[in-house]
Length: 461
Image 1 (cartoon, rainbow, N blue to C red):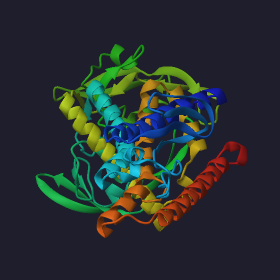
Image 2 (cartoon, one colour):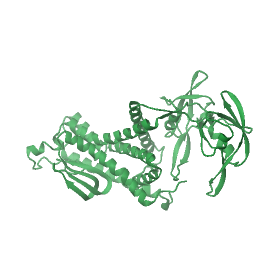
Image 3 (cartoon, rainbow, N blue to C red):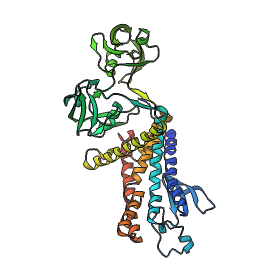
Image 4 (cartoon, rainbow, N blue to C red):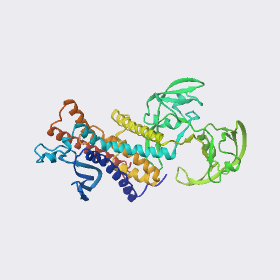
């Protein structure tokens, strides 16, 4: 288990995540507002007391404020940072009023409001597209190599060699897509479409619930169907590989170690790790021919489950799982968009499951949990950290689009009502709705913060 980063690293990483994301979100509002000729009175990263700032030649006050949990653009005509409209007798001249937000046509106001979440969404798309372009896309046959203990898929009638082609009607092109299709549906029964000997079958599979943890000890409940898709094919070697020294080659398919059959790559550790220094016979298929190799299992020292140092056996081989396919810039953008919508879909599913009781409200996280994860991902390197930034960015987009007064989605709901009624809600109604929405958001923030605190080790979480 990896040690958690220190407090200074966590704070730095948190600010490095939230600061730029808030800036980008508010720039979306500001730039589209400026495009339509709306004057901005204030642009703030953070809430509360101003720590530093300046006023530009257009009269906009750019400032950094004390509470780094959001930000706002206050346009001319806004009564407050939540964009409640000013009263009609605001004392502005006709020329000044023409540059206020609330006199602009409905479609312009809607675009200005929508621009903030849209910018966060586009940032997520850009990051995921860049990952796809530079790293390629892993494609692997969704062919069953083995089953785990008490496998739900095996219990439903699935067999080794079956190929999964769809889950709950969603097409499966690669084994890498399967975990994401089942992770949020623990306890649910989903139809899984397979191909077997040229036939198409649909099997109802009840998704098992599995508790998983990462290298920092964070735990989560995910759905699992109990399938191992990784065949025992050697993809490469590392270190002073005993397997390579014995004559095994990349592309060889291991079928047995001593008298034990090997059906998936996941079978190998349990046949090797307990026996450092032992000589075994490894049977592998190469060009359709079975070959036998005497191999002396190597040894490494690592901490065991009890935290004590001990020796573990290893063959020094990497799995040959799938093929990394390069993608064009256009394909990368398409992947970025589809993966972003997939992430947003899991958010909708998660919230629905919390309301239906399928998930605990304890899974909701707030600023403390975001800070904790920010520090952890930062300690894993830039790839992990930037991927986390993409995840938080699309979270901000999603949350801001919720139809809660005071959030961007609440304003868009006002505009939808205005379009239907052919006139806006009166100023007093909007003001009270926004006050109620802000109170609701503050109550939610308090709840998730308490959730975060009780999950910390100091409180027994």
